[in-house]
Amino acid sequence: MLEKYLEKINNETKVEDEINILKAELLESKKPSLKEPILYFLESELKNIPSGFSKTSFNELNVIPYIAKRSLLEHLPIQRHPIPYILVRYIENEIPFYFFLFRESGSTETRLVGRKGLPGGHVDGVDAVLDDNNNIRPKETIEIGLYRELLEEVGIPKEEIKNIELVGFIKETEERSVGADHLGLVYLIDVAHKDYKSMEEGIISGAWLRKEEVNPDELESWARLVYENII
Image 1 (cartoon, rainbow, N blue to C red):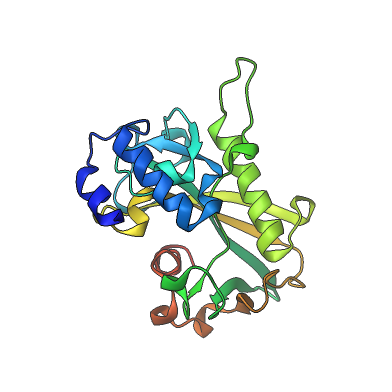
Image 2: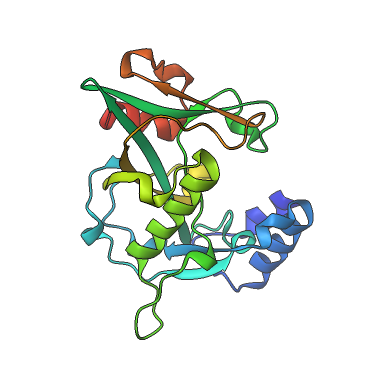
């Protein structure tokens, strides 16, 4: 049934179009959590972000943020939802260690089971930071989502982050790929110790690794781009 809807959804389909609403209702019936509102940008406002990995600065992200149910945004080419994707680093005796997540068989992200990745996730509607005119401030809103994801996935509170830096964007353009719905914002953060672990043991396990301990062939696609361009 989903494929029948997707065949009719194209680059002109808007969030509020009937076919997209029907698709959303079907997705929600299978996964109720998709009813949650998340942040998104219009694809037409992201043309200056190159495909693949780029070291574009946030100042070049000239967008108007919107919020809608995730079910409406999945498989909708007109938009992308931003994903803060977080490289956590701890330096010990001048040797950097990086925190990786390993998705186990209990993970709901079945396409990523057996792969190593990084913390990150969608920016929820409740993360929105508004200016005096009730407009969403994208930079601050995405960072609120980042802090929430770090706390939920790795147990790192904002107060224990020594440094945070946006180091790049990931923009996949392959049609119908999972990444085609997303805009990755890659952040590098430094922490003062490595007494952190995955908060979802049994679903996702965590490990601190040096660069030479990482096998690129075991990484999910975004993590591999980060490995090749940042680590």
